[in-house]
Image 1: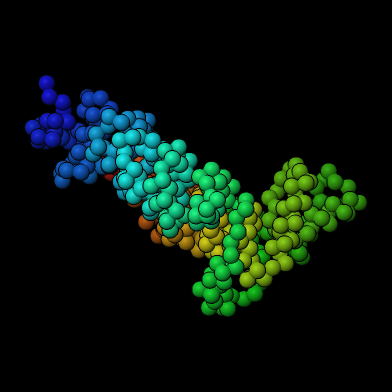
Image 2 (image 1 turned 45 degrees about the horizontal axis):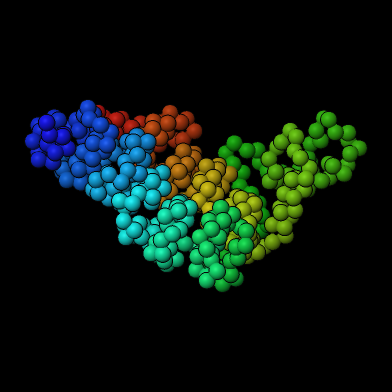
Length: 394
């Protein structure tokens, strides 16, 4: 008896069977199901969209097994590595699959960014490939420490991997980069009133204390402990440090030092620190109430995808920051960042609505029940969830 994939390729099955196949509901082995779905997605105008939707939400373990199997048909592997279909979770398996040619991988390495580049740099096959490494060096999205490690004569793959994992170690940003940013935004900077660092207050936070507001003394502390109270009353500390029942003294002192450093800077100084500073400084400056300073953080070549993923969840940043994140190509391709933005009640509704179309079924279901987001987002998520669920059934 002929395999089902052969019958479908020959259009030798009725429409209702094709429909069932597009939903991934045929009683055939997982590998053949994926092969059928890919064929329909690429070649069938009637059921292609349904097959693509089914593939997008298909079991990750089954897809990873197919991506790693050298016997998987070329059409399936080509579908998985296509930039419009590529799942970062499948890339490690695809990189090590000898049936995926170096030329194909080089095409991804040429223009990929963010998380994809990190995965490339950790691949044993990539590290041994002169062709792929050469293409990686010319990737315009490879900047900061990885670029330095790969583009210098002494640079090695292991150095690049270390730079990706520790972007602030040994990473230098030239003054030209800062100057270019300030020049590009000169008009906006000139029109912004000079004011000290003032963090944005989140939706669920109490207003930040000012110098005119007394700091309450915890009951356990004697009033005579003026030194401790005075330290707690310092503006830099009370404005940014979260309330903690038992705050260790050493980290608090280090954090206060960073905040004091920021408080001494004017707008231009904070912009320079946002671009050239370390992770802790970026985590504070992203909350700056002066928009141009907060946006400068996103222009830092040292910022990581993990940081931006965290920023996308924050309710204590300006809406302008949440609007700017998906406008940057490097971040717009990262699904966790998209998902966090949609689930953040502070994200502007028009931004969330534009990102909803990229959400997977399970995330749409979660959004439809998320009472923190607006009614508009919940209702649209529910509508899209029902539509995708219905399409998957038919």
